[in-house]
Image 1 (tube, rainbow, N blue to C red):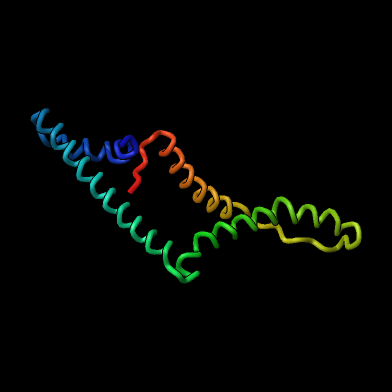
Image 2 (image 1 turned 90 degrees about the vertical axis):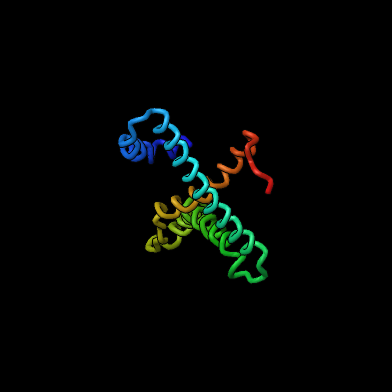
Length: 134
């Protein structure tokens, strides 16, 4: 709710400035916030249904895209911070002209952070006891 107020608060306040009655203004503001939360909740529910359908699908191309992204990110990080420096250190002794590719980790870390952040939000919900079971 705080995020909604931060993002939409100024817009709602400008629109509600046209209502002169303070109690009516407050009621309309609460109505608009409630309607917005319902719209966001329905979008989240629709996405959850899509996620459930993908997760139970037998095809690896449907159910396996999230694990594939996770393993790809993990492999990229492992290469960039473990394998490439160690191999480079050993190989430079015998073949000093070989250079290993260095990955651009900016997009990789953006993706990993997004994936882990979403999981972290779920953990935070469970920690606070506000998760929904169904």
